Image (cartoon, rainbow over all chains, first blue to last red; front, top):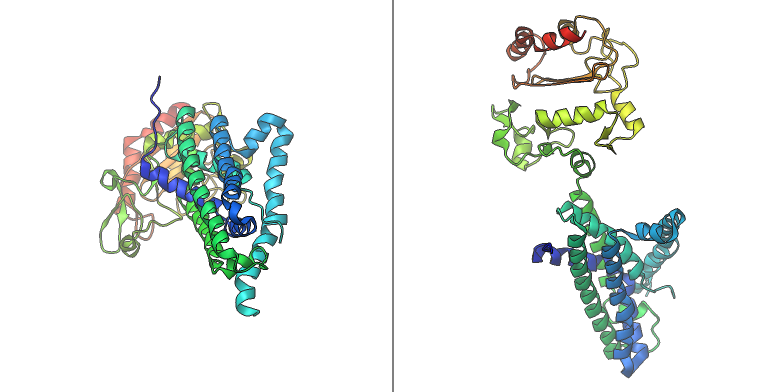
Length: 119
Length: 304
């Protein structure tokens, strides 16, 4: 069997850190504290559930990418045919316009502008 | 404010393609290698995300009780972590910008598929390059085209400075002869190729040519920088419609003629004339040697 070659550990660590900081957005920062506050003493179960969807889900997604050797549109094209690729090109664009832009602006307003300028 | 659900799983599918791209650049090409690398990267990313989310949940547990009324988002501000969100955004922007900067599109889309290994900006071994000119302080320019100030700043001009050798030029020219296809793999789309090789539209005296590949040979009536006599010398006919080519001031020329399926790459290092092309010693030597050597006359004399 052919030996699998791994990149140097430093390079792997740098790419992982880059991917982590790309994933780590607004919601990863402000949602977990409110989750913990609402759950109270059961916080560890909540943290496990959140970890399941947030980090294990991410790992599974990378696993899928590695297995198919393709990105989101490539996988969608494999499953749904040509229209799948188009749908999954449209979805990130629509998400960015309708969810992420309002969210980023509102969060910036609530967390940075309002506390400082509108006391 | 209730839309604060993470989309990390969808994002990970997109970022997966990004990492695959990065692995391609780092010469990880077989499927098994990409598989194991992407797995390790995914596991490390998941571990980091898991640690931060758990810690943040614990943060909410330990301090959130002090603010029972605070809404989502405000809570983080209340516990004085709000500014980290902007840092996350900034880091994403910075990483995007850096990854865009380091992705050399030309090398990946053109030179790697064409296997032009010796074509590069900023050659690693500069001493093996022929001198292309002299800088302001009489420094011989090898493997760089920047003047002394830019050299001190460690820069290469963005508009220029791509270095190559005859083998690679030949590969590129053959790709142009095949109308943008190299080994059944299309490198240039039809419109791009047409734009690169289109003829000069008007025979104005010093008109800017619409296609730089047709700078010299296209339209024999043109007198572009006094090059026309040389054309007559080489080809002995006023106009070669099908041929395209480019002449470099350092004493190089490239000719591609689809009619005869012919590519000529001619490289010398007679140096770049300072002010005018005619009358300069190096240019005259170039001019004379082409004539004496008779290379092009010989080749084209049989054909034309």
